[in-house]
Length: 99
Image (cartoon, rainbow, N blue to C red; front, side, top):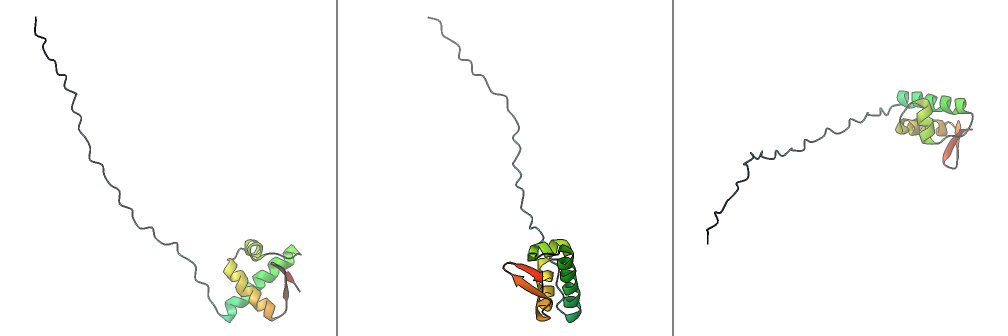
């Protein structure tokens, strides 16, 4: 009997690139605007809140007032506090209305 020749096929060699690990860079914390707590700023924010309520002619939530007046919700609360103290506004459930 004839001997069979063993044929070994070599697979082509491919260069393997090393996997590069991407290090997570710490994201910069979103800069938050600082709310100035003084009588002048509170008065201006009270004016913004009052004007937003007067323009709407209905009770609004804090979020709605912030959107209409183009100020933050914190600034709405600051101005509303001033107006509550002067009894210019009143609470109607979750909403604020002119008194």
